Image 1 (tube, rainbow, N blue to C red):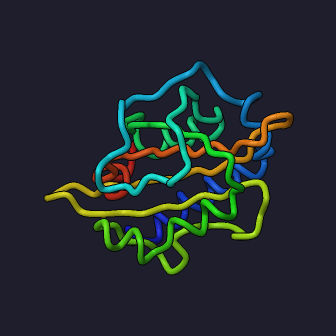
Image 2 (image 1 turned 90 degrees about the vertical axis):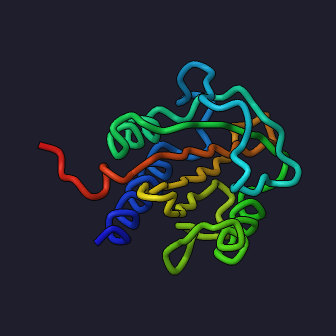
Length: 164
């Protein structure tokens, strides 16, 4: 049941990213934000990415707030690499080595899409269920960069307890 809810969240996030235009990140972001100073040690950093002071696209941020009750941490990076290269980096095997689990695909969407994708991974930390969403989005021209948003949440209550 928990895996089904994670898949639902991944599918909805992916649809929101597609419907919001993926490449329209700069026009959809809220104020610059980031709730953690560094990428977590159990999340591999993309090799050419640099930390950036970006806000997550508003539709994705609202969806994450809804799915997690507003309890998630966020950090953003940019890289000159194309989205398919970043999606290909976050393999199930690589993430498993860091203690994360994934559904059968790990990343949702076409790995050849020039616009972006989303990856959802989960792990247990004691009694807590932790979900990591990696949202990859190509920036609008003239920028040739790709933004990578990492959102991490304790989804123990979100996934197991229906809200009234």
